[in-house]
Image 1 (tube, rainbow, N blue to C red):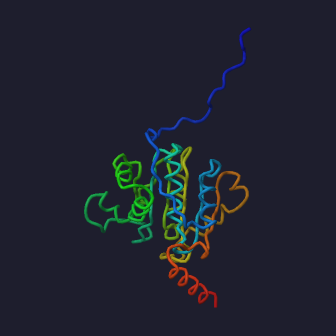
Image 2 (tube, rainbow, N blue to C red):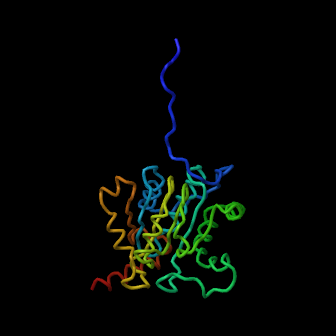
Image 3 (cartoon, helix red, strand yellow):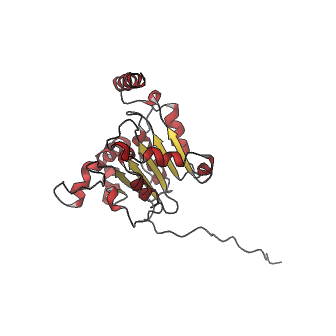
Length: 243
């Protein structure tokens, strides 16, 4: 007797993306991650998390953890490539015209934090492979309008120095299957009340947002791993600030 049941049909949306990596990445795990940092990695690699607002003081490995999580997803073939965007803070409009040279050489100083994290996490030959295949790219925030990013890891660093409209433009570039990180240190705002991070992050810090895959995550001084000196300085200045 023939089985008359209809075959399962994949109704997932079709998106354009680069081919997956041919082999897993050789990711170096760090033994000094705090319990909170490990919790963050577990949270953001969950398929239910689409966007995460990450805040915390200097030295808490916010960017490092975001890059580590993104590399894991890239290695597991859950993302096709990574786009790193960082505030330039030369003006409220984030223009990069003052640097000489072509666009790649202009952007390079702004993506140096990403390159540093990559070299710490994976072998040099894998960093070169990812950049050569343009699986890891940097982009100024002023270039985002009109773009659509599907199946990508999107990292906006130094978001405390972006305006509300810039963060809005960034977050609305998110296509299907992407993972978005919006990273900020609220104590290092260089554009005064023009900063839009706190306002836009607060609007998504509720249960309705979490049900839609948007989460907020905060690190504290207990998560500072850069050095004991930095931890002392941040705590000392924090006490003075509250007096």
